[in-house]
Image 1 (spheres, rainbow, N blue to C red):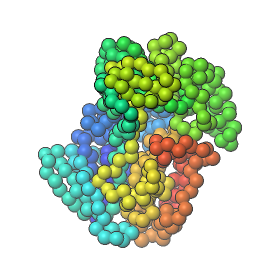
Image 2: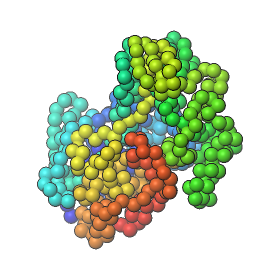
Image 3: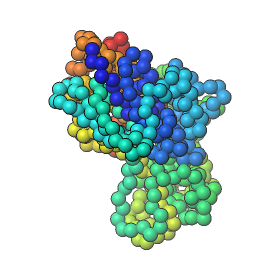
Image 4: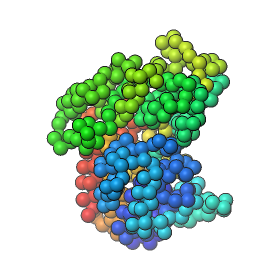
Length: 434
C-alpha cells in the first residue's frame, strides 16, 4: 500500500467533507487552506469569501446539513453566513479536523511526477510568511470551491461610474445615495437588489432572460422540505410545480420580467420572493439586457437609456483551478468533464470535490462525494479488485445525470445535475467499494 499521504486542498464545506471521509477511511492526508481557519466562503473574514453582510442559505438547514452533524434547533431555517461559519467550526472541532490542515498555506502548483495512471504528485505552496515549500504526495483531492473567481462580462463602450462584480459587495452602505443598476437576476443579484433598496437613490435590475421565483416558505414551511416523496416524471413535476408557484408568486411577466424560454428546473430557480415585493412597490425597476455604455449612461437593447452611478454585475463565478494544468482535469468547453463530476478519466489518484450544482444537493451530497473518493482511493491503494470497476467506468461514456431535464447550455449550468439521480449514482458507486 502506498504510504505517501494525500494532499487535500481547501477547508470549506467540501474540503471538510473530504477530510472527514479520508479520516474515517484511515487514509493519511495533509490539508492545505489559504485562509486562517475552516469554513471557506462562509467565513466573511476570508479574503476569498464572496458572501455579503445579508447572505443566508437559499436552501433550508434540514436539506443542507451534514447528516452525521445536524444543525441545532436554535439555528434559523435559513441560516446566515455567521451561523454557517460557526457550524463548520463546530464540525471541525467535533471530528478534530483542524490539526490535519496547514492554514495560511496557498497552493501554487500541483504536478504529476510521471505519466502513470497513479503518479506521485508534487504540491508547491506558499506560507503566510511568503516562504515557498513543496512536498510529494500519493494523491490529490481538490476542494477549493466554485464561487470565488468572478465571471465578469465584457460590455461595449466605457462606463464612467463604478463598475463592480458582486464579489466586491459586502455591505449595502456602498449604495448610499447612488443610482444603482444590478446586472443579472440570479439569487445573489436579487438579494443584493433588495439590500440596495434601503440605501440607494434608485435601483434597477437588468435581465436577459426570464426566471422562476420560488418563495422560501410555502404553507408556513421551508419550500424545499415539501414534496419530493412522490417521484413524478420531469414533465409532470415541471407542470405541477410551475402551477403552484403561480398561486404564490403570480406571473413575474407582469412585473416586467421576460417570460422564461425554458421550463421550470431547466435552470437554477431564484429562491427569493422579496424581489417581486419590491418591484410591486416600485422600489426596483426591471430593465432589459445592456447594449452598451456611454459615460454614465447605460443603453439597453430595447432602445431605452438611463444614467447610473454604480453598475454591479451579479454574473456568477468561473471554475478556477489555477494550480493545475487544465488538461489533467479533462477540461472540455465550459467545465472539466469528470466521472460523476469527481474523477478525471486519466488519473486514478486525483479527484475534485464540490464541482457540482443542483437544486437541493446540500452538503450531504458533497459528503457522499467524499465517501466515494475515500473508498476509491483506499481500494486502489490496497490493490482491491473493487477499484477496477470504477476505474473502467470513469474511462468510459459518462452516465446521464440530468434526471430527464434539459438544462440550459450556460457556463453556470455546465456541471449541473439532477439531485436525486446524482446522489443515487454516487451512493451506488460508493456501496460497490464498501
